[in-house]
Image 1 (cartoon, rainbow, N blue to C red):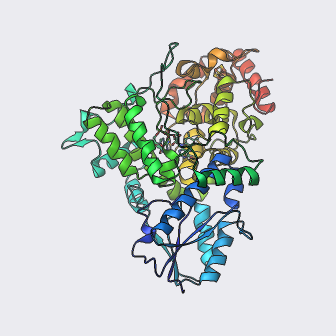
Image 2: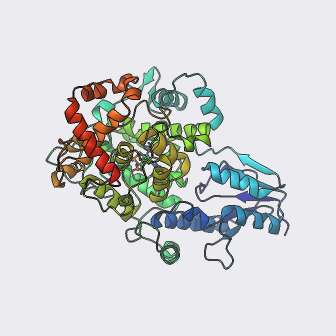
Image 3: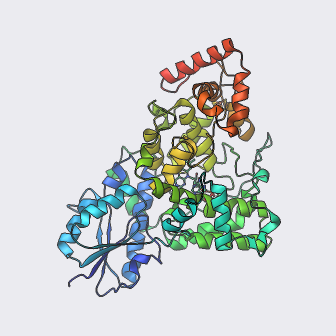
Length: 512
Ligand SMILES: Cc1cc2nc3c(=O)[nH]c(=O)nc-3n(C[C@H](O)[C@H](O)[C@H](O)COP(=O)(O)OP(=O)(O)OC[C@H]3O[C@@H](n4cnc5c(N)ncnc54)[C@H](O)[C@@H]3O)c2cc1C
Ligand code: SF4
């Protein structure tokens, strides 16, 4: 039967209400989906990340078929499966000869280019992605009014335009931001009992995918042993419900803390479901807001959580598309070191870093503070090339899609974009870790020491980082205190610290 429209659905476009099917007719149009090895090879991807995408795609295709859609689907293990999305789409267009190709905005600049090239002369219609609460055009319109745009202003604007957590005359509770209440550490007593997150046992489709990934990508990083991610919209909803019921109330105050034995703490673990579009952010915001109004969660927790979804998530997407493709080339601090090998193994004597990488390899997940202040901070202080850090984050987390991963890595963790994402580098020493987590108690290094055999590498590299970039950082008022403290260090002591930092850098990131 001739095909009218070919409806392209990518692995991160699995929303039930996708604009791609607006006006479409199952009798005339065909949904096209493809599993392509190139998508898991172009950066070495965690096995769980690959499995999650494939399983969610197969479930989505099954749902569409059950609704009567014709789905043209390339499986990775089909005989003659083509290696890239582009090649698979060229072949599909040649075979089905659609009148036009329709898709929703892609989540990665490279994929958008590949698809444009693949459709050739066939007309291509790209629709606005209504998963997000602000369109790219609206974001560009907002940002054009600011000389130094900041997430905080954007977030307030989003609160006003959506009405989320708003009263008639301003923000609920009279304040936009409760961050000051959301920075507690646990102290020696630790977090106490933490409610376990809901797990989703692999069904037959997921088990088949797990076998396929294990056989096809044995050398890829990470483990499949603990795979328990939601792969359908129903499971994603159950994961959200579980978070709202059991963890949201304490999300706020412990948002910035770490505890080695509790790799999730009160975080939601819904990023992958959101990024695959199994969850709609409106649904998430409404559930959190309702929990506040019903008295099930305090305002500092609900506001802190809503800020992540309505603020940060929408902000990073706007930044990504506004600045790509030149954004991924940025290296404002001239970082030139290779990514240390222990990022792929977790085999490092630094207890905090080893823990964060090992958790990541085990599940494909680490919470924000592990990503930003443990693995990200070490790469910042060491001066690792942004492209290599980016490839690691893009491959290693189950929720990684470039529009969200790249600004977080280049901008927030590495300050490689020169201040577009964040107003200052998130530079900190081992003393920060000692305050906010418990790894230091089990580490052979001392977070307070910057020189000598027991010096914490974070602390040594922190002072070296400040000294290396002092001229630039002096011009940033938000770094004034940190630079003043650097200036107080006697020259001979600073020289010894910097000599040790040079030895760590020369030794591939490991203390000599
Ligand atoms: C270097 C680095 C790389 C990152 N890479 C990714 C990535 O590839 N994919 C991804 O979804 N997030 C990424 N983040 C943001 C954040 O760390 C994750 O969204 C979060 O850890 C996911 O866990 P959670 O669902 O338990 O989040 P929670 O802490 O429960 O937060 C709730 C939700 O808010 C959103 N959110 C929170 N922080 C951010 C942020 N900074 N940017 C965008 N959305 C945010 C997420 O959708 C998250 O699910 C990265 C952060 C850093 C510092
Ligand atoms: S002493 Fe330093 S390296 Fe060791 S756990 Fe603490 S911060 Fe990490």
